Image (cartoon, rainbow, N blue to C red; front, side):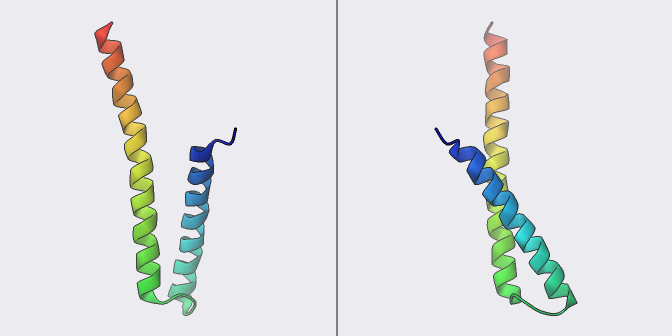
Length: 69
């Protein structure tokens, strides 16, 4: 069975690396337009926020289960 969350995580990391490279290229003077770069960075931020939210939810759930014992 393929771990879809792990694949999604690594795709997000690759997307962020791509955006960082494009940001450096934009600063130097080329490649993507400003609007496309901003939209890409916002999508990366949203994806990472969902990832962090799921990790925090798991952690809080662990504490609640521990308190019930």
